[in-house]
Length: 81
Image 1 (cartoon, rainbow, N blue to C red):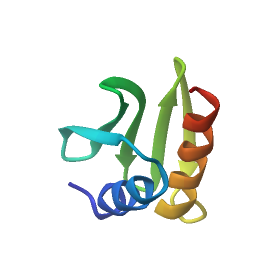
Image 2 (cartoon, one colour):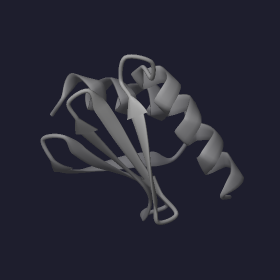
Image 3 (cartoon, rainbow, N blue to C red):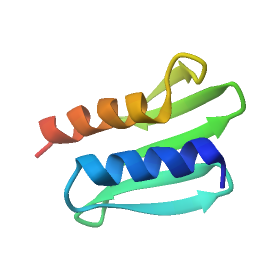
Image 4 (tube, one colour):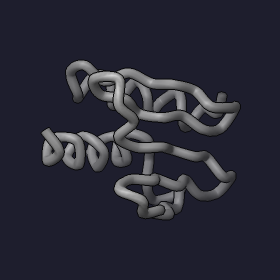
C-alpha cells in the first residue's frame, strides 16, 4: 500500500465516525460508510484519483496532501448523510 493511501486512511478515520476501508490493491482503497462504498481513492504516482458519484476527480499530490484529501472526502461524506 502506498504511503499516501496509508496517511489518507489515518486522517479520514480521525475525522469521520464509522468510516471503514476496503483495500482493492496496492494503490486503491474504497471508503465505506455503513458497509456501502461512498468513494474510491487511487494513487497513480504523481496524481491521486478520487471517484465519487460516478465522477473521477484528479488531484496533483504535490498540492493535495493526504490530510487535504481527507478533509475533502469528510465534507463530501457529511453532505451524503
